[in-house]
Length: 395
Image (cartoon, rainbow, N blue to C red; front, top):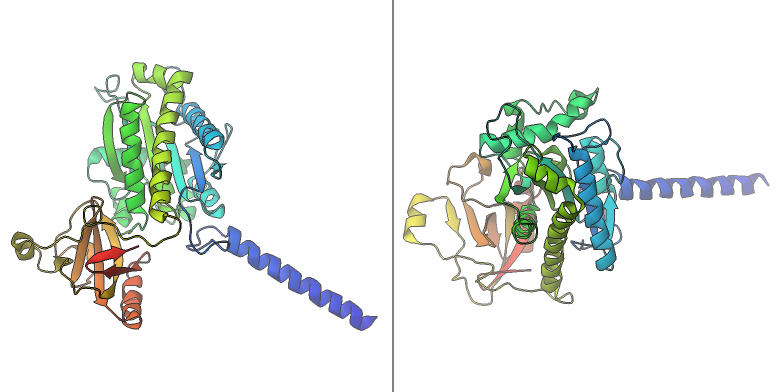
């Protein structure tokens, strides 16, 4: 009897340990690789919709409307469109009612469910002292990055400032201060492996905002949004329009206006998922044509001005497969001595979908490129190995 009890106790302890391990793998926030069900994550299968602000945080205020309510209205309408029309796509909401969530809680929800796409919905505004406050109009979509203008910085400051509502914000957000310009320097060196997908999706949203909702196009922009930085998936933050403009406030606060904004984002998502599904092509590895994934031949002017940043040559040996380490993708071209390379040299790049994709190292030997990868990984945590054949990237 004694030995039987010991055996049962041992089984119980092993079972508890296994359960705890599974819980950690599935639900620990912030893990880079969380998918234990599939080796390949399929973008568009789980969409996380985040209605900004809520509860005791009203967001920006109009003459009658509150941002938190507009955001929630559009979020719920968007979710219903996806749920009713896209079989197999799971929708997760950070909130479905008027409750307050911290930025970290929003990111944790997205990461725990292994989200494949994060859409944060907000409404824009200008400072009360701004002379254009009642006239400004237009929708914009944002991705993670360093602000390139004071206006972009102000938008990021406003959205990040909700952390001041938390008593322990300084500790929880590791000393990040939304009103300190210096705090945003961290985003300059944060390399975002999902940037290409995020920018492509953001561009589609902007086109739909114009064609479907009749909005003024304020473009795709970048800034240091904390909630985007902490989500481990393609992510965008939309600013629907300006609540400080009475005309736009009425539009955003109406059922028809919210339906049009939701429909715009939905249409962009349909295209986003369709593009991904088409590339998968029943699981086949697809090589993109030079027109869509350009491995551009260098011109003399480029070689002279960028001695260290070389364009990957298209005229590689026929049939040869080789590997590189990609560590950065940006919508702009960097100078050869850019601090963002963190001392890596020589650095090459290839253009793909309007993005400059920067690589280091090159070898036909997998073991050798693994050594290069470890070096780059120590500097850029989102670095990964890519494959080329006949001068074209192999997907």
